[in-house]
Image (cartoon, rainbow, N blue to C red):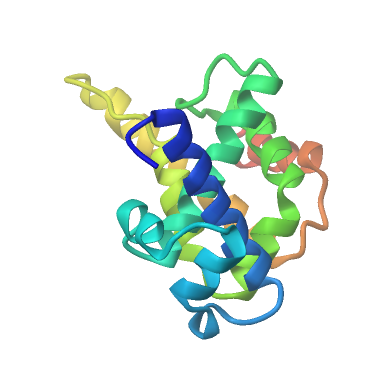
Length: 170
């Protein structure tokens, strides 16, 4: 299967979905690339052509889930998170809480972080204040997400937004 972008994205998602399915049964260290490929019903070379690691496959899936969710929910600001639009961030993460909990349970926090960084941290140009502001809010938001996942999503997205408001003095 060649260079069609839609086909490539579909195959990558099949591989990532297969990996998530297997992660529900066993640790990532016990999952082989042939097993992922067989579960996804694609050749091993497809895996190696698209991913350099299992973590990269998980990161890809998390980014795709965000893109799909943002599209479905008409999210206009997708890369510049501030205290005012944190609720959107928490609603999305709550919608995939089972996958996030699985990632944390299997020691894949770096994959979650990489997806977060890829999606949530904008790359600014020359405006130094915007660069620092974007990083400050983004890393703070990730810290809240990290704690929320570790606490088992006990709070609602709305409660998480209220914590942002309190932390930022709003």
